[in-house]
Image 1: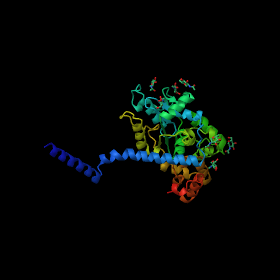
Image 2 (image 1 turned 90 degrees about the vertical axis):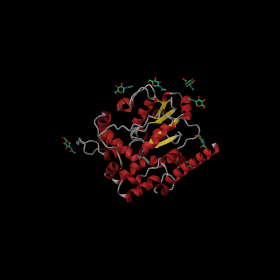
Image 3 (image 1 turned 135 degrees about the vertical axis):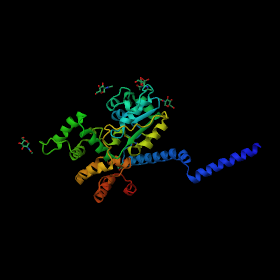
Image 4 (image 1 turned 180 degrees about the horizontal axis):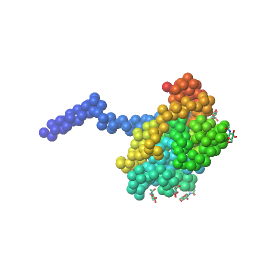
Length: 333
Ligand SMILES: *[C@@H]1O[C@H](CO)[C@@H](O)[C@H](O)[C@H]1NC(C)=O
Ligand SMILES: *[C@@H]1O[C@H](CO)[C@@H](O)[C@H](O)[C@H]1NC(C)=O
Ligand SMILES: *[C@@H]1O[C@H](CO)[C@@H](O)[C@H](O)[C@H]1NC(C)=O
Ligand SMILES: *[C@@H]1O[C@H](CO)[C@@H](O)[C@H](O)[C@H]1NC(C)=O
Ligand SMILES: *[C@@H]1O[C@H](CO)[C@@H](O)[C@H](O)[C@H]1NC(C)=O
Ligand SMILES: *[C@@H]1O[C@H](CO)[C@@H](O)[C@H](O)[C@H]1NC(C)=O
Ligand SMILES: *[C@@H]1O[C@H](CO)[C@@H](O)[C@H](O)[C@H]1NC(C)=O
């Protein structure tokens, strides 16, 4: 009797599994796919970063001392042992919302945390506030995360956000006047800073003085010397943020909030970026790609996507990528 039941149960389970395998049932797929897929993607991204860093001598040896600039980009959340590197224009406001919401004392919804309150919130703690040995211990024990984005989309996003809105007068007025004074031929024109003026300004700036909104991502977070556990991408924010939250074992109800600063405007995308890049003289575009050459290689983005003029940009892409000894064919697949 008992044995017959067991045999029936066994057959039933076998049939369930076969059914799952043959008909690709979603729950079977989800069970194995998501986690594996994310780990494979992460391993791939991290291997490329390691390789490009080594080939370009961007990795320091053991006596590395984290720079005070980078330690100010890193935010620490202790209850979930989470360190987040802030890269402006890659969803950083929403990541700061998450850090605040991980703290149980904030019993609010993400929408209640307004843009300007989030950015200078007194409960956000930077790694730089700790002494050196504490910093090293946290860097060793905590889950370190950074998010990246196509470097030129990020640049367009910075331009639209900072120079086409009046709200933040430090950029739309003070900074804009500096750019005009340097770049504008006809000083009488009261027109807003154009994208070409902005691009030329970024190209001629000294690297270490570049504003964090357009400073190259590798210079903000130093992925050659800080071994990030997860390198997420803006382009796959949903999957990558889910993976981060799962990895740090965040409460299940907490999700990446995806709130936009200007709700009525579309996010910077391929279509919008291409319009801006087609307006630039080829030499300016080439120089701009060169400013972000490490970001393109480290994070596997293709400069070739940026204009419709493929022949021209293929040449530019090749020259931008020639600084890595990775064969450009593996990039331009
Ligand atoms: C990196 O450093 C090594 C040894 O100092 C040197 O041989 C090599 O040319 C350097 N590579 C680059 C890309 O600068
Ligand atoms: C590490 O750095 C020191 C000092 O900068 C240098 O002398 C040494 O050769 C480096 N070691 C390696 C393995 O690169
Ligand atoms: C954040 O900035 C606002 C406006 O600039 C200011 O009123 C507020 O006191 C600041 N908060 C903190 C915690 O610095
Ligand atoms: C949570 O926020 C409160 C209030 O700002 C703060 O005192 C506390 O240290 C935070 N907890 C953690 C784990 O960061
Ligand atoms: C760092 O700070 C901790 C806690 O305040 C303290 O115990 C430790 O002695 C400090 N270490 C150094 C090297 O100053
Ligand atoms: C880091 O990990 C070590 C070893 O597992 C442990 O002794 C130490 O307390 C941890 N430090 C923090 C800040 O969690
Ligand atoms: C700028 O304005 C001044 C005075 O209004 C005028 O004399 C000058 O010709 C103008 N320059 C240009 C380039 O338009």
